[in-house]
Image 1 (tube, helix red, strand yellow):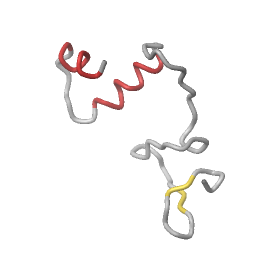
Image 2: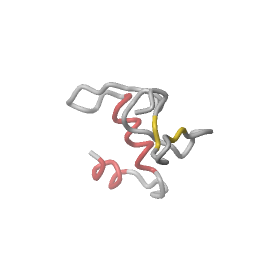
Image 3: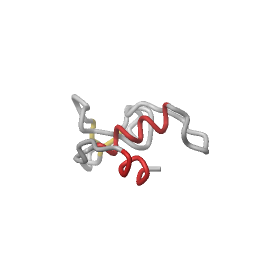
Image 4: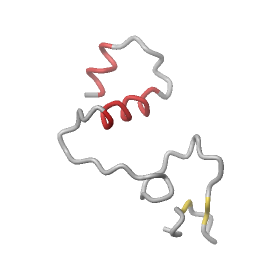
Length: 67
């Protein structure tokens, strides 16, 4: 899907993958079930636009649950 989208779209390539992932998820283009979680709830975070980051005592990035 990513390759086909990149080949058919003449958009800027730097950082465009996140926007494409968002479209694939929100337009229901994926064949598998997707559970959308916030950065604070989930196990994966898109931290570029987060105003603050939480870290544990070892300096690892954690969510609100400390996970």
